[in-house]
Length: 139
Image (cartoon, rainbow, N blue to C red; front, side):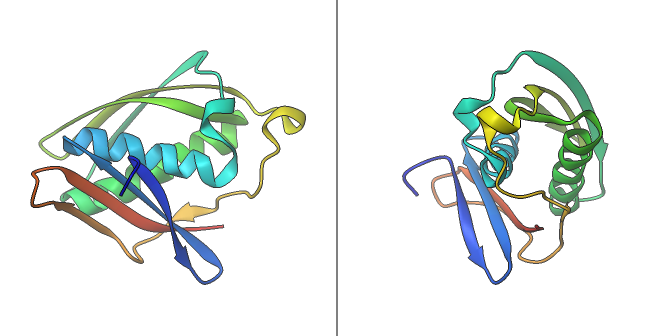
């Protein structure tokens, strides 16, 4: 993979995948892939901080909870996010995400994401000790 995030083809929905030297970095890069489903992440100014906390019994479910928390914040606040400061420890995720209100003219949102799913859900450590995190999101 030449970049730290990518989209994964999947029928009518789309997969998001992040890679990182740490689990937290992989989760942050998966969040960038999530934003990229909607718009170009570089077009989103990281102006306003929003705290997010999640917990789950395993890292796969934590990824789904994390992405669904981001989707919830995007929908309720009418915002997009481009910076993700993530910490993960003992099944707990604490993050501050940074973004700005959606500008239809400037961001040109492509789709609305309905939710992260259990389909294609995988979080794993790679042979180079980096992590990858991925799942399919419903659009």
